[in-house]
Amino acid sequence: MASGMVQPLSPSQSAAGMLSILTRVSAPQVGSKHLRRVLVTLVGSLLHQADLCIMTRLLGYVDLSEPHFVAAVLAIVFNPLFWNVVARWEHKTRKLSKAFGSPRLACYTLGGAILLLNVLRSHCFTQAMLSQPRMQSLDNPAAYHVGLALLGVGGVFVLSSFLALGFTGTFLGDYFGILKEARVTMFPFSVLDNPMYWGSTAIYLGWAIVHASPTGLLLTALVALIYMVAIVYEEPFTAEIYQQKASQAYKRS
Image (tube, helix red, strand yellow):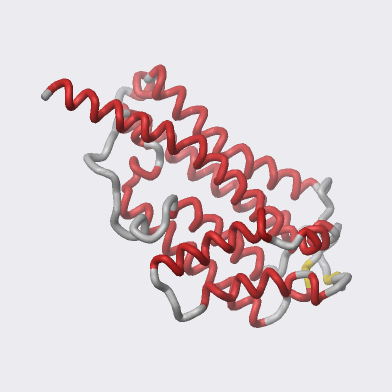
């Protein structure tokens, strides 16, 4: 389907409700509780709290069988599946560490692969948006600036998370036995749990709004859903790793 402008069936019921939520992110209140509530609302509105009528109308813009859309869906689903499977396999067998000669080098290699996969995912996401129609009710200066704000907020969370965790902390170093002495509590972890994931989600949401893309909004909802599943899957396992470390330290003492 060629990229172009399509008139929405009912502008008052399409993106207006979503934009009323998104514009909160540019509000002057930026306290930690407010910021967390806004970001959670942004994601939740796409998955649980959004009017089903809005989602239905979004689907009306999207050709689910279009090749670029299918590629984007596959990339979004595959990435967290890949790094979780590989990281757990490494934690169980240590075969990557043995193959590369050290846990740190193995972690760097996996981190590099994850970065390349994320570049591919972003490329597929963008191509999917460009290959499908724009939404007129999102194609205006107000929505564009909301999208830019989300891109900025998401970028801050992603970059500050990386600086707080370091490369190995960001890319599953704990699965390689590279553990931190204590839980990271500095910004952005002081205002939001899993800021890397939610910052990434905000970036995709902002990118979709900048492009006035209903396809991008649906793909962002999928990104958020996959991250939620990943969090449920990862957090207990990571907690178990650090409990094992604490237990071993206690026995040695």
